[in-house]
View 1 (tube, rainbow, N blue to C red):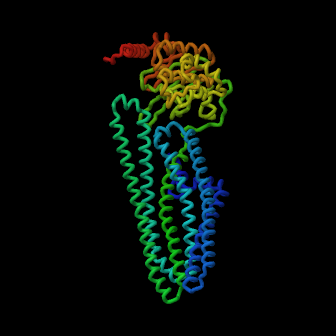
View 2: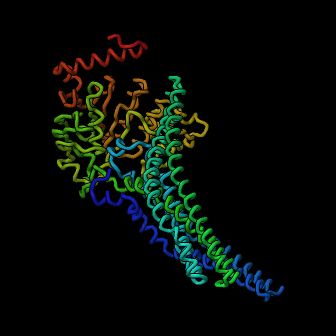
Length: 599
């Protein structure tokens, strides 16, 4: 979402191309060479009708000789070779920058996406982002490359051709220009429709991309529920909508070329009548008449290119508006200027009177307060949906509270440099994200020194080392997209190994052992605390055997902290905590028996 008027103006129509000005400036040498070569090609092409004029005049006046005709033919061959050489040069000189601009712009977009806050990804789907980075970017490249070439070529060729036509016959040229006002009116009318329908096509392409992405990423669920037919129908429906929008755009674009050809043919009729009459009356020579008709055919390309270029630029403007919408989106989580304290392993985190909501309608957290002591394990427990995950995300500064504040050693965390602050935390989510890389690369991605020895060390802590050894590739085993070749428990332990490898002072665990049995989970936590005694652990869990060993437990209910203390203390003091223990224990019994909750 664009947050200010000045940024929004940069998105509008052709003004959106201002985004590309710095890139064009960087490649001005290439562009100058390409434009120069293009102009040379145009003028060499304009010389050929003159040679034809001289040939026809020599033939009609009886001056032609075999040697003279061979000379003219030689000149045409030389001109053709020159045209070919300079045409290759302008293609190389103009297409190279557009590919480089495409690469630079894609990298800029991706870097900017990585800097945006979590709320941006809640507003915009992955498919929409992918469509902007692939399809929209390709359209912009076409508009900058072939659009710029066509525009320059049409202007230079059109203007130079008119000069030669005026030189041959001023009156005949004026007759040819009679249809031009009609062309201008048709261009203005149709280009507006092209722009509007191009935007609709790009939006629908985003929808279709997201639908396909969802189907591929959720293929297991689709197969489990035998929903292949429904998903196929959904893709067909969105694809049909894209087809209809593309056809609607094609119809508008298709109107332009017949209109152009009609006007060109109308000009040809005028030339045949008035030019033929002038030739009969000897006002112009037969060579002039033939050359004039050739120049008229050369003028046809600029007239046709005008419509093609307008269509291309309009589509490019529509795509660039969508790219700019992404580029000018601002992160809602702002970085401060302070450097986090050096002795963070002794730091205390305090949450004070924090309130937060995602959509401004219902508060997820309300006046929530707690503290985290260094080197201890702090557990946050409560019923499902009470706000545990949200609280952990606020500690990581993936979101900022609307009310209240979070302090690190007494200083508001919003005053710290964002990157420096987040570097204090490692994080394991409920649904671990595993990248389509090797086990070694997945574990070492957060570590400054990702050696194999270090990776094997953390794999041993999470009880995954022996299992990895049994894999055919060992640490070099590719795990597939989202870790598809691993079991759920292996993915969770691999994500924990990655967090431990980063050696950061705070470890945030959001129910990270749901796919791991209780005995293995207890062994892992015991090993973690023994191997890293200074590590501050902040975790949420729905397992009594896990959080009962925490040094301090904070119980949440309806977005608030309603009790805190040790497991034994809470059992004695809090009726709500005892009820939570009974509820969790009851659910775990039914889960082990494989029966539904009868209550």
